[in-house]
Length: 301
Image (tube, rainbow, N blue to C red; front, side, top):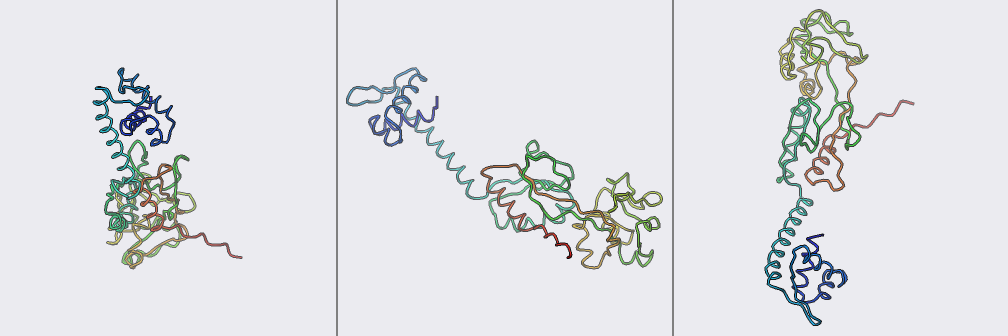
C-alpha cells in the first residue's frame, strides 16, 4: 500500500466533501480515490468514513486519523522543501581528499576564493597520498595523481603533476652544476623516504638514477627537503607545485630539464549523479575554471 498516496486521498475527501471533488483536486479518477480509501481502511482495520448516496462524513476514528495525516503530510512537505532548497543553493559540508603536497601548496590557498563566493559551504580538506574510497571513506571528491582506479567514477582532467630538480645558487657555486644524470653521483642529493628506501630517483628514461651511498638527507616531508635545498644542503627532486615559487624568484635553479620524470596525469574524481548536489557542482566548476588543462601544442609542420 502506498500510504502517503492514501493519506493524501483521505485528506482530500475530508476537505472537499466527496470522492468526485477530491478526484478533481488530486487529478485522478473518483474510482481511484475510492480504492485509496478502501486500502487505508483495510490497513487500519476500521472505517474512516460513513457513506450514503448523498454524502460521507468522518467516523470517530476518521477524525482522529485526519489530524495525524495532516501532521505527517506537513512534515513530508517540509522535508521535500528543504531538499528542494539544497538543490538550488550550495550549502553544507564538502569533503575533499587531495595529495599532500599539491593540496597544501596549491589547492588550500585557492579554496579561499571559493569559500568567499559560497558562504554556506564548508570544506574539509584531507591531505594524504593514500588512495581513498569515495563511498567507504565518505568523500565527495578527490584529486588523484596517476592511473584512475575505476570506470564508475567521473574524472575531470586537471593540469599534469610535474616534478622539478633544483638546487640553490649557493650550492651550485660551491659544487658545480650537473649536466647529465650520471653527474648526480658526485652531488649531495636530498631524498624523500617514500622513494626506494631513501636513495635513487626515477628520471625520464624510466631508469633509476643512484648516487654513491645513502642520500645526505632523507625525509618523509617534501617541505623539509625544500627548506634544506634553499639552505644549500643539496639537490632536491620534488613536485613543481612545491618548488615553483622558489624557481620563479631565483631562490632555486632548475637542473637536467630534459631528464625530468614525465608529468603524471591528475584528475578530479567524484561519483556520478543525475542531479549532482550544488555544493559538489560548484566545487567541480571552480576547479575546472581555476586549474584549466593547458592546450596540447600542435606538432611542427
